[in-house]
Length: 297
Image (cartoon, rainbow, N blue to C red; front, top):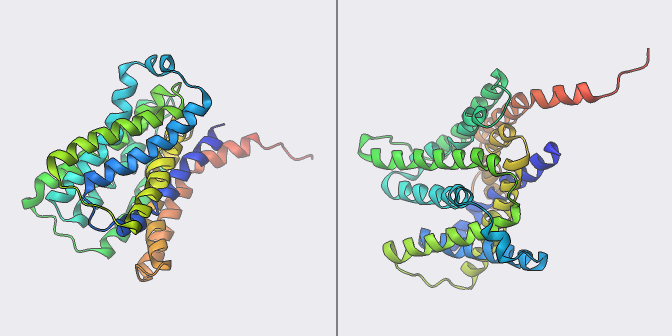
């Protein structure tokens, strides 16, 4: 059960790896406008499945306020602080700080898990983070100036919020993943409000609409449903470490599609991230060995 849920959660990581490609196609669409449109699509797609399943209003109202605060707070809070950070700090700096969230998931996991944090969990997470950091550093110029302190703080808040959301999701694992449809719609509403207050509407062309639809169905839609199920029922620590594969896969996809150039740094990052994932998976291997039948003498 846990392995299946972890694999389902990993689908989100693969979907997030195409986020950069589709986002680049959207061009100059403002951040909160894009947030509103993509989460609206992701929510409406899920709503279709809910209607087909026959979920009624009483089922929705039965969930306590805690569920809504954790879920919508996590989805919207992360994006709000991340977008704010990008407006107040260099993209490379903010992205590296924001990508502390997988490491924070591993560090915070003892809050909800009964077993202790082992050296190989932390070592694997650090190794994978070093691979992702090396990849990001090789792609951009970093400033890390005190002039952008507010932006750096916003980026850290985004990482903290997403990691806390992912961890706390485990405490509401009785809430069905289909409810993510309403969490997405709530996030879309808040994103729309921010767009009206902070931005000016930009009319997308045909190609931008196609990219927005693809984002809403995949990296913003299906990905959050998969992540919800994975964090509620899977191995949270492994999902945290595996998440460092997203920027690596994203760079590989951009390279294959001609949007980036292959470098040996890419290969180095690959080895570090894969090595970190394997190290963090030691307990999974141990569990499988214990379950395996013994050999006949």
